[in-house]
Length: 123
Image 1 (cartoon, rainbow, N blue to C red):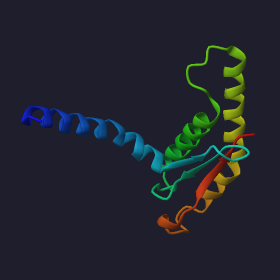
Image 2: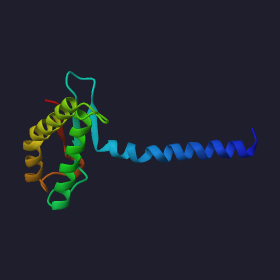
Image 3: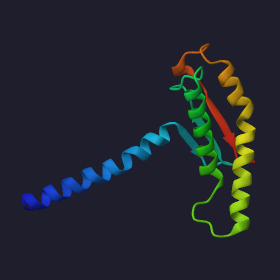
Image 4: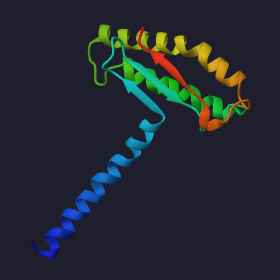
């Protein structure tokens, strides 16, 4: 191989890795187990300060994204399936509400690195 081809391959590999790096980071905050009887997502929040409005908003955003990833199929053009996905997402978010409230109420009383995750299950 010539140096130009090797450089082109190395550049392409670096760009591919860079393109997937943000997605990998985003997955660190949420783990979805899809191979169970019903999918479950674990939303980590140990890095958030839930004593602040910004921390609480970020937790709510993470829970919503996780519920959306579990329930709502992308690119659906069938209204019934889309509405079912939205209903599933809303039910999953509602089921996580007591855990979110407990996490917020316990803000500052636990070590962040030991903070559990919010568990969201498909209804």
